Image (tube, rainbow, N blue to C red):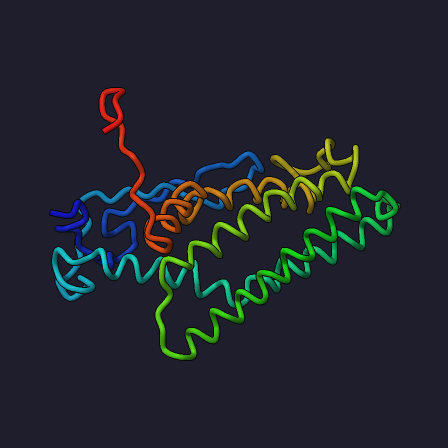
Length: 219
């Protein structure tokens, strides 16, 4: 029997009165963009079970497909504006004359355009009534790994000043330091890069499932 058999997808009223406790997780940037949630005696009506009891895997995969895939149709817009802002900074501080910086900026432009065309392809697929499938993981893996390298480039463009935090309450950071910190999280939330690679390999390419290890032996 599949391991996911028996799971149910339930919409729970997310409130303190319903036994839900939310604790922010402070990140290395000082921000709290993620939280850990505790459900203690939380209840929901049977009507809130999506897809039927013990059949939660299908709606869960549909949710993730739209989360990872639907966003791909417009994700390039934010990355493109961010890139042009960084190019503007490179022109201002003279880093644009560095051939290695120019090469890396050109690479970033290429990656953003690939996101754009991939988004258009997905949009055409959705317009034909097809649902996002495991290939949505390609988009998530692509943009998150791109953004991690972009964050590193951003600090190189800023230069030595990137090592100094601005004055301010708490753990203040500037715009490009924020980009660098946030870019690391992108390869973790909504499924780590390793998970996305497994999904692409097993569900999109039909490769054998990842080898499992038991008590130090390959099975």
